[in-house]
Image 1 (cartoon, rainbow, N blue to C red):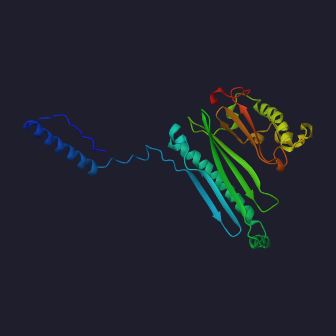
Image 2: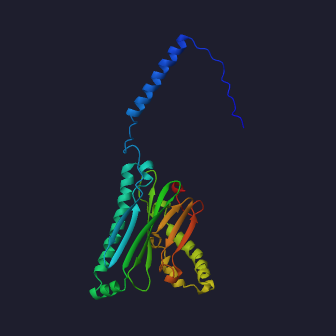
Image 3: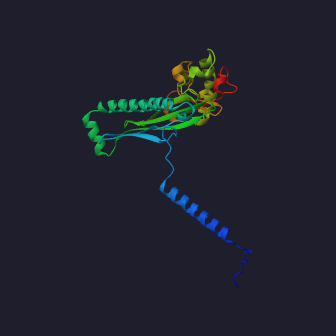
Length: 270
């Protein structure tokens, strides 16, 4: 195929035009030189928040191993300020460190012959701490899941949750989400109504065969029974670890409640 011919528009130049183009070329060359020798300043880290990502706490001995994660930053750094963010991170880090200290104290209590026997089998006690973050229009929540294996019949799992007001950075308790008393009775009633058929379906048994004593004990209207909660979009989620409302074989359970229709729930956090 023959090469296409490009016809440029006819142009005429006078001497002044040529001088103008020469000066313009010098100016452009000067701009290129300045940009190359004067890079743009780096933003101040105090003004631009840096997401540090998950932070790790680790221990590894002949007898046990620990891996714990906690957030390095939270959305509070933008919505409530750097101090609120630092306080929230410190609160969660302190929690993780406390769990590690407790676990290591428990490990120190095991007899030496048991440790040596486990080591000879290549077995170690372990503690793993991970977390997930959830957001609602007014809050950010962190759900820590702990798995602890002390080389017994099976590992144990449990939770710890943190919920923060996005505007103030305040750590919220369950009572902060409700207006007036009676919310524990409401949560107790709804949890029993929801969990009984769920547990029955999980075990493939009639609902009247569910262990009501254990279910009722774990959902008695006490604050400690509902301490593990978080807000996810328009839902309040209550977590129940193994053994709280049913035998270990049932695993953990949760109850999700629509905040828009939940009796007594504060309009401030919907």
